[in-house]
Image (tube, rainbow over all chains, first blue to last red; front, side, top):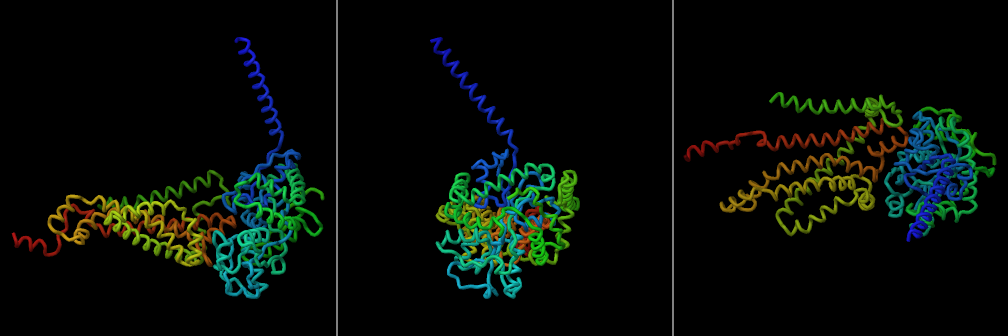
Length: 333
Length: 269
């Protein structure tokens, strides 16, 4: 009996010691990684987060020595504040949010483009015969965001109209209003509007997007950090973008697997696999410029944005384009 | 009397001043950046300097609040009286009343917009939805706690149902009615803002604030919040004044004599 007790005690001790060693090794490995807190631009996850999810799930960040965690802002305009208050290290924001941050003297710096072109536009319900020429007197949905405020006047100018010629409607959801005929057009980006409306109706909406409707062809989303973070952690910023580039390329080449990673990490996102798959498929072509490059920003994209914001009086003076961005952390391609 | 009046006026002024002072101290001592939260002066200045833009939006919000409040209060009185008068109505409606308040109001906004459009309709429904419940519950409580002896006396004296209601029940529900109205008045503006946030055609105070959030203009965000708060407080104060005017007996220790009543009673004696 005593021998049996002794052998149980020894076995228990070995197990305990083993688990202690394993835990210590694990924590040592976690502590050897540099933590980067990533803040998304929306209160919940959606398919534009696929590259970051792929970076985490496929080990691109870990291989670069990074432990990337993802957090979500309380509303669509708080990511800049999360960065400014140190609640996040890297943020995902729109370029117009970046301009508003600079206007409000929030010390942010855009370190890379997410998308490279403008896929924003107007969408009418499937089968609609409406055109931009018939925009006068119509109800146009807006999320009330700075990007839509900046872009809508360009569309109206192209149609020979002003804001007084349309009724701008703002609500918490656009698709039911569009499908029920309460609004004539919604404003969105193709990678969100098409999967949303196609998912509800089985048919694609009638789309009017990009430079053909008069809007400047400028990127919509960027990755941003605070200027102090860029100064204090240049190696981390560079490692983050290098790993993210590899993850983005992998997610673009392996779309089904990348979306499956997203669904696995966020099973309760509220979006179906079909929505995410179509959304990501429509996002991939937006990620590269005409030279096939990812991330690289240009001074002209920021100058064009300034012009749009000046025209809509969202800013009163245009800061130098260089005050918005840097390409110094973008990896060679 | 004068001292009491002075206290009633000075008390709120002192507490508001203290609140503003604490707010300013937090901003100053906490070195809070203006894009995170403004000081009270910046917030007030944002309102005054944009008053020509804000006033039409504010007056529209006031209209939504008042219309919805009146509709909700009337509905609350009708429900309260009907439920107290007929047990079967109370049994059927009471669970539904509680259900209405358990439903997240935001979830109702989209169907309301689909049914009623973007203008005043959905906002009035949302405000009324919020206001009617405290009014109904308070009326019901008031009517359920009428002095039973008085009711028995009126029955013994052969008073008709309407006369009993007018002379015994109505005075009994005045105090709880005003309690319900005060709660409703404070929440009414919240309903109007929820309505505006849910769907607006053109401009609204909620949309103005939404745009200010997008532009990291915290002074405008807090300024509009102060405006919304002022609407809520004003509604409350108006109800308090109405209560003061409608319930003179609460401030008198001697019953008021109706004109001529004293003489007639003296002559009959």
